[in-house]
Length: 162
Image 1 (spheres, rainbow, N blue to C red):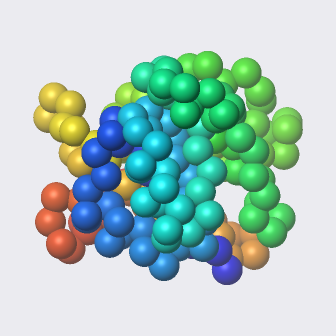
Image 2 (cartoon, one colour):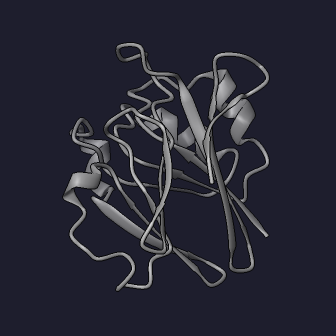
C-alpha cells in the first residue's frame, strides 16, 4: 500500500498544516507553481518528491523541473501536469490511471473514462474564496482512494473524495 501526498500551487508558502497532513506519506507529488526551492526541500524532508513546473515557476532553480512527470506505484501509473488544459496524452490509452494537476486552485477528485483526475487545490496564499487544501492518494494493489482536504483547521475536513 502507498500513501501519496498531493500538493500544488504553494507559490512559495508552505503552511505548517500542509506539512502535518503530508507527514507519513510514502511519496509526495507537487502539481506546480511551487514558488521557491525551499518548498521542495521542506517536502523532501518528509518523503521523496516529484514536482512539475508551473506557469509561475520561472526562476533558475525551476529549470530542472519538467512540465510533466509519469510515475508508477506498483501497477498504478500516475501522470502529473500543472495545467490540465495542456494535457497532451490520452491517459486511458497510455495506461495512466491517475492524473494530478494544479493551476486552477480548485479542489477536484473525479473519475472519468477509467482515469482518476485529482487537483489538490492550492496550499499556498488564498486566491479569491477558494479553500486552502492538499490531497492524498492511497493505492492498495489496484484499488485507488483519493481525497482533498481543507487545511484551515486541525481536523483536515474532506472537500472531495472518490
